[in-house]
Image (cartoon, rainbow, N blue to C red):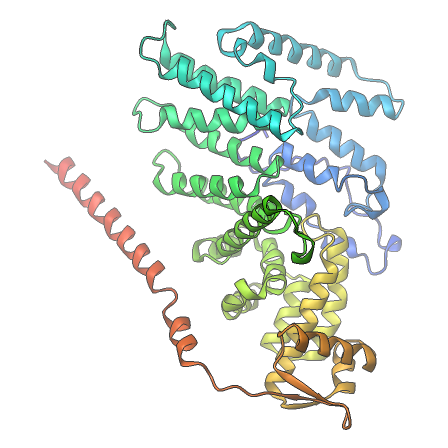
Length: 500
């Protein structure tokens, strides 16, 4: 990863981080670990976020628990050495009572010298007070951003600016933004990146690729700072830029879009949601609404036709997350279930995963016993996957609901003992689980306690919903068609000008 924010196609994790031998875990669930594959499409700062794990959580409870603690520390250091965060590496050496390599100290000193040069420069002088700020304090971060934005307005947009070369100052702003990103000042980076994009937007003499790099830096900063609403907006900006760019080859655009799909997973799975009943403050309610809206927008991107093609051609391992999203978010993703399962059935010969096997057994082969077997295997994945860790109970409950729902489509009267067997529950647990579904309006049914059975309520299909289902994609398809026609017309105009 030569630059922190420019996608490259090689991994950032050393080979020393290897799977444990089969004897250490039952049936070697480490074979389901795709961490090293994910890191090929992540920037070093995001790789470090994965290796950092959940805060205040012991090693044995982290997703990487089946790796040794020493190998994880070595991997963290290898990733951090690709950034300017060398102080963290030196601190780790000190904590482990290891000798700090001389070249590491020399690199750190060079970074500090460069930081000093930036501080003394005209570009860095006006932002020096923010370089060592504590950006965990949201108020301070907001004030910092406002001040830098004001500085940019005064010094870069003023036509009477005494600076000798305004364009050169704008490019210095880009260099300063990248340096701050490498140093981990993510709140400042987002502000400077957006300001740089605004200043060069529409300029014909702007350096090709720098706008896209700035947008990637902005997106990474939003993810690392856990600003989910801003992150999904940054994702939209990158998609728009990739659609209009002319300096990238098709293979490079494919690589960039593959990176984008991997980064979207942070928005789909990592926001920490609060149960509805525990939200009291209006501000918390607003923030929770923004999180859910960002997650829904990111989930919709996963099922876009272009992104599904990318998964099949460049990243089949992401089908795991597409399947998990289908089960965890049935209200938003349920309408895409048929096409998702069809996609998995095409790729099952190239890539296999317990979540894929579960969905194929349930919806393609209608084999409830096989689906239950694969559901048990899914637990291993949730224990060793960064994005899915901590979601097993939600997934298990949603998967049981899916099994029960599929079973109910075939039978109108079902014995509770049969339900308990299919869901690996006791009859008492199965009855309580069904009662809960009925009470929360997730199931139209009644329980006949005398006969120990569940009777499903059949509802006539709603014509209104059928019409909505058939026509929901018409608007999007029309927009895509119009956009394609505009591009064809633009190409024809260019060809006519060239001939003239």
